[in-house]
Length: 145
Figure 1 (cartoon, rainbow, N blue to C red):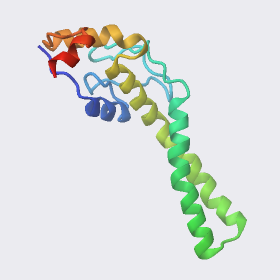
Figure 2 (figure 1 turned 90 degrees about the horizontal axis):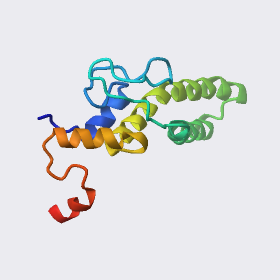
Figure 3 (figure 1 turned 60 degrees about the vertical axis):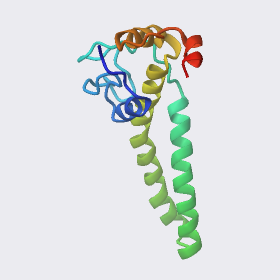
């Protein structure tokens, strides 16, 4: 009988670019290319469909940090435009690139944990292996609580 992985743990493992199931295998084989399966536990990731959602999240997060910082520096010091560009363009670029892969890992982990897209069968298998008597019977879960 295996212990189920909590959503928080799955997201943290995905953000760390590790397999959300075991936490040891690599989730990516290249920068944004998700591996087909975990080399440690064998979990299949071919069903993942993160698409553009990680990029949207990164744009929102980086934008909400960089724009107020840029405005605060402009208001307080009024540096020349070339200096603002020299500072904020690299900060924006490296922040976005640095967050893109971990964010995609977290989205894949969310899909995996929730049983979205092609992960439904894997979720049912995990639930039945954990000894959950209601595994695969989502309509009965509300009766249990």
